[in-house]
Image (cartoon, rainbow, N blue to C red; front, side, top):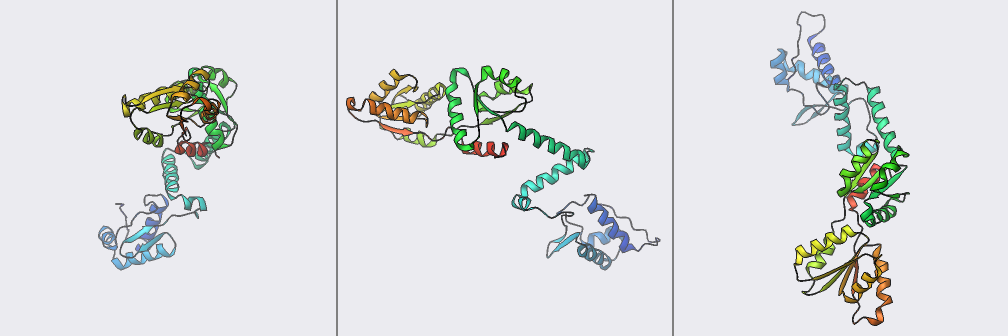
Length: 321
């Protein structure tokens, strides 16, 4: 608790001394917005002033708009010096975070002009980075990059370019302001490349495939399950997941759409086929092509978006969309 010093032999009245000291404590944020002031009893004990005198000081502070009295709770410091803009009213947690960040930066001896310059420089850099966006994935599994690209182009409606990780360093040499987006699995390698170029890297999380896994859990024993994807990595992961869920109860077949022979064999044998959104129409076309030779038409299921919706929302905010 702050110590207020009242000089009884001063020409300035005791109430004015206390008023000025509390006002100074508020202005210097020793009493920050929302802080509860001492009760009149506490302050009377500390200063030796009569409680009626302290009540009049608090009343004057409230009339001046510095504090507010909440019945049954106490006297609290009010936010000063600005009217909240509509966006800050809409996001009060963000407003509190901004206030605390500014306070901490000021405590680090930065001026408001310096803080403004820092914030504007960061915003300007992120804005420039958003102009050019690269999607990257390993050359050996460029299919996963195609899935990311397709998903983001539909969701973001901005131009994107797919670059193999192996070529990323050369591309970034001539693109000093860019953003690189990739699956979180590839982040360590991508950040190593981008760090020296001061390029922003944003990781994305994949869709959890809970709906598809629920279908697999409920499949009858000895069902022949086909999985089709552009990505070899997804196919490997899918096989492991199915085996962990069902063991040897299901016969699992996988194929990339680029492997026509394997794809047609899968279509002829499978009871159920799960395909990524890009592969789905190609699998449907393959089923139609061999339909006359099929004993039964396989059930064809399209998985949802490859990228988790939260990652897309975060990416939109990061890119200012």
